[in-house]
Image 1 (cartoon, rainbow, N blue to C red):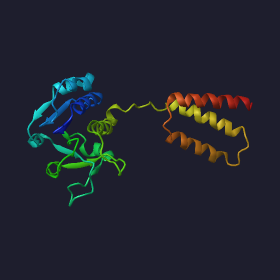
Image 2: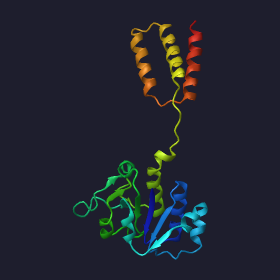
Image 3: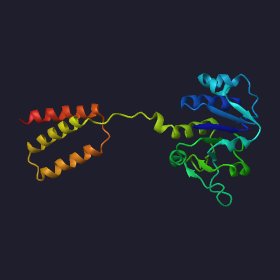
Length: 223
């Protein structure tokens, strides 16, 4: 379970946009730590259908709330600086595996200055979004969006059904017929190469049938 924690957010717009993107990725728990934003009706305008996420959000005075989480991840654009392990990051692409199955707080800092060293020291893990080193600092809501997108891949990634075994066999059979109908120097090598390509391919059933149709026509033309 994920909870997004915004430390002293300064903009109604960003709070609204964060609530909206949380709704997009099915994350419902939002904590606002000592918000600096005026929290006007602009939050509702920016959050759109994610306004219920904001309405259910908790407002706290400090990061003591982090004690209840299994793991706390702080995000910073400034990594590799300072001393020791304070800003030594875990790559964003590796984060899903590291925090899998744990009640996790995703902590984001202020728009103007990010998280302080003291706040980063309260985090179990530091992570960062790979970006142009000449301008790595992202808008708060954009940063939240990128992180939630990465974490949501296993949940919401559209998975195409692979080729059915019967279709693959017909595809290989038809290809083998094409090879046998021509004068290849090493036909068995060609057949084996295609079988391995088919096995490693992510082609869908629909794509395989389209190729099968082509092979069938080519085979018919060689009769």
